[in-house]
Length: 120
Image (cartoon, rainbow, N blue to C red; front, side, top):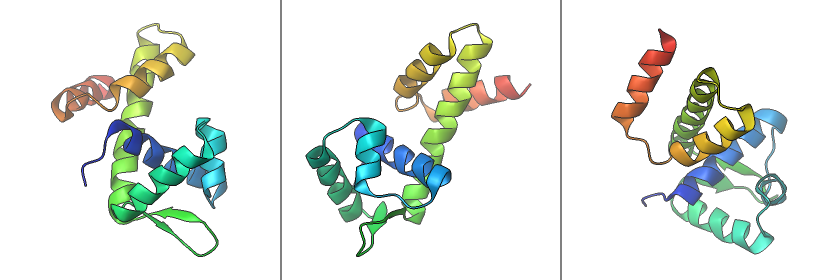
């Protein structure tokens, strides 16, 4: 299953929520992302069927290895691009908002170049 931007956003949100509080349920995603319960429920079903997440009997959501890999990649892109834009003088909120848009579309080559530049 090829993930679209929205799927990547859900995985990134699950990763962030799990880092912040441990157990993640659909309602946590609803509250964090501001989406409706039906939208989140549909996305959770698609991610589960795609093998990106597991949902236990109590409704707790965990990332599978592939889900964690995708989420970590997107989260790293978000954090690095945000920091890069802030260093360029962009307001932190604007930098984060723009990074959220860029992180899904930037090529691996361009991201690696920004990463190299930022680390030097």
